Image 1 (cartoon, rainbow, N blue to C red):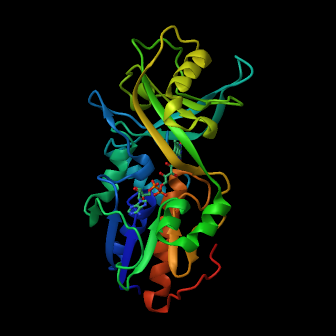
Image 2 (cartoon, rainbow, N blue to C red):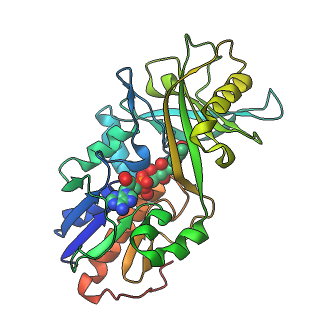
Image 3 (spheres, rainbow, N blue to C red):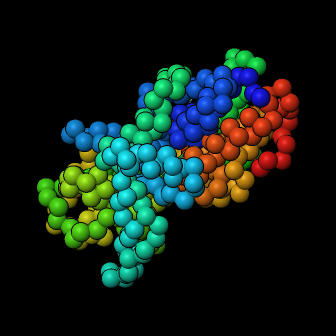
Length: 310
Ligand SMILES: Cc1cc2nc3c(=O)[nH]c(=O)nc-3n(C[C@H](O)[C@H](O)[C@H](O)COP(=O)(O)OP(=O)(O)OC[C@H]3O[C@@H](n4cnc5c(N)ncnc54)[C@H](O)[C@@H]3O)c2cc1C
């Protein structure tokens, strides 16, 4: 069994990986450059309420993830939000789409990451620049592949294959809830918008706050005003929204995620939502798959060369 592992990244992939390893008696360090866990699940608090600027929701199909989500639901940390999303696009009366139940968190999705991180040895504010200095431990880079490549350049080939796309997330506050009830909407074939979600509905507090996600073409800080206008037009809102929180995600999601659950590149594991469908639950499953692999093979046998797991 692996004796020592450094997990870089305290997003859901890194936290899921570390939890399995620790439960199996492995000595683990978790290094996170941010001040809080969650990565793309973390969101700010605006006017005393959390706002999700990263993942809009999560879905649950993986059995291991389901058991974690069941625990969150029992404790009131997560709740089934909606099974229906509107579809806006060319037609103003496009049908809504039914899909899997989408889950949300009353305390923001970041609260779920905080719950996973509780009791784990996460060292915050540690930005890993290179592998040297991490000692002889097995390293897991649990993050988007372009970020992994900055630490471990051979991961650049994976980053290129996965084709990561940026996104601008904008939270808009309105004088009142001046839109017909909807949970969230996919905006098809729009130059500016990909999705709009009702954050008050998602959170359950009915606050007049919408969160919009931009297309890659509008993923730049200067596009906040364009996003606001686009939301107003798509939803036929009477008032402009006030941007209350903005987040630019340089690597929001991969356009071409890998099919394998993780990669092993020159002896370093890559985990996250670049493996499987680019979703929260895929990141969780990827982290666990790396941990299972480590526990099954052992550090001493891990070679410093690719093994074709990609
Ligand atoms: C705008 C947007 C909308 C989305 N919508 C959805 C959705 O509706 N449903 C869904 O399921 N998923 C959605 N996703 C995807 C979802 O957020 C991700 O699948 C999931 O959060 C990925 O988790 P992760 O652990 O793989 O990576 P991350 O959450 O990115 O975690 C990586 C962590 O590594 C840290 N890190 C990076 N480099 C270093 C370094 N050098 N040193 C130390 N730490 C480092 C980062 O700070 C970060 O905390 C969305 C994402 C975005 C951005």
